[in-house]
Length: 496
Ligand code: SF4
Image 1 (cartoon, rainbow, N blue to C red):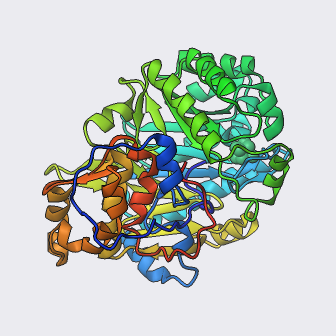
Image 2: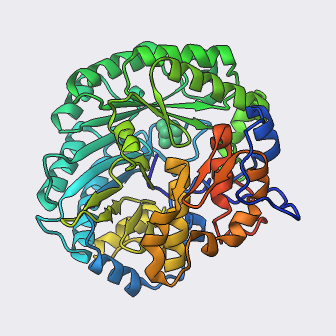
């Protein structure tokens, strides 16, 4: 559930600025998590891009996007979106096409490979620009029949130079895989498996329309873990679902930990029935309120930390050996349409950081190449027709300005590292005619006064840093640097 259209991203309104903000003042954090959420948590974008997908334009300049592809020189990543699912889970917020007939997958794979041909004519492909990551998301990539999946993997390898360190990741629905399917994924060369677990409690599973016996999850997880490289298994969990209690949440996390993943993502359920009407089916049982959501998330967090997982960013946890934890220790944690990644950057021969150029294929997939974001149409028939005519299937796009890049760097640093290195920011953006960090963002820092005063933010000459449990509202802090928010479009997901 990664690089697709991102309908749940949204705006927020910061708390009111005081008349005399003490920017830079340091206060000991005194608020409890519940008080922080009560006072500061609203809604905010998830910021897997900046600007966020709702700001991509339908009236984009296609020649300029092509130019961005033609001049991009970063290492390559490839995201492949498979929109099909056998049935729709009630909580789902993704672009999904419910389909029982798996024979549709053959034609879909053919079109994916044709689209890859279209994409690779737009950007230079060479042996010194190898793939660093291939990610299959959805929808349900494991909805594809094994033979179609094998053909897709072989087609990618035939078109793009792979290298030994390339990560091949795939989102796995344990319900769509049998023992032979799990073995086949390992034989195809996948090295990271992301299992959509969400919750292991049968009552919660009934309420969210995703019956998934824990024994089946465990069987698939153990099989993948046994065949995959070390540290190759992650689980997605979700809080804020009907029927969840602190007790069921703790039990789910303990049972999930015992299945051996080295990484967890713990996402808050985003209830947006005005965008996803099927979510009304979740309203048959009361949804947890803000306070209950916090308790659920906190219970999961405590359990994971007690079992040795390190908190990363906003919602990830990993054992110290996991590549994401290693990247965080080394200051390399990145964020793009795939979420948190240790593959967002590479270094050129001079040691300069280069962003990965993320090509994206499939209906609704979103690419980030050079300065361009480009989102494919969500209409599968239109997508196929565009690809068949030899043109990109972009429906919306955006070309980042220098101002977007300098703001995006701050937002990414806050969400990945919970801090901004002001000197590094100034060194990177000085040639864009900006002053130093404090000058460039004087207004934003002023607007953040309530966070400073509450002890959730601290700054000195070199660093702006989120303090204590201020990470709970890091998305709100990041949103202060978002020039696209006008406070009037807050129809988005809660920050906690
Ligand atoms: S399997 Fe995932 S993508 Fe498919 S409907 Fe369920 S939540 Fe949505």
